[in-house]
Length: 227
Image (cartoon, rainbow, N blue to C red; front, side, top):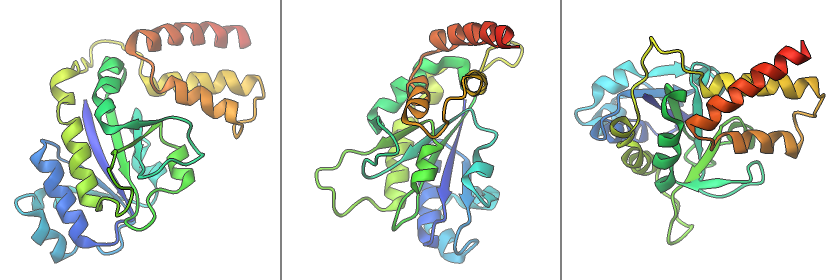
């Protein structure tokens, strides 16, 4: 499984460099930046400290949608709960959730918002699930690179615990299941902005590999009937 760290509109070059250093120390290499305010920048290189290669290879995008279109599963991060999602999971639970997905996930993205305002409701809504770091005090919140470091730490065991995808094995992915469920729901003319519609996908996001495979087979049969 490949894990990609996505920073949305980071405004402080030092935070980008420190984030590159943080993911490098935890064994990750992929950094994606969405509309960084001031990058590349020598100040980012100073804070990267041995991780400049990650900055040099960082991919630049103009939107979260563009940065995540090749990913099977997207985790948003937030310092506080908002009405856009019903369930929020502590960072310590992510390993278990991802482990249960098994080979249904090949590429995973974890998204961090702006230093001052975090992710927008729209951006959080586009994520499969949202995670947070429990704090003894809600203020001051964690610095961006500190948050990246903590999530990278919690995710660092994923590579050791999840089976590596075998490209020769035809394993239905989680992202394909979402597409099939969307097709079924569209046939019912359910409002895609309704709470019920969004809740369905929130519950899908915590399914394990066996349930994902089962729902794939059911969805395929339903789509055949609809056609």
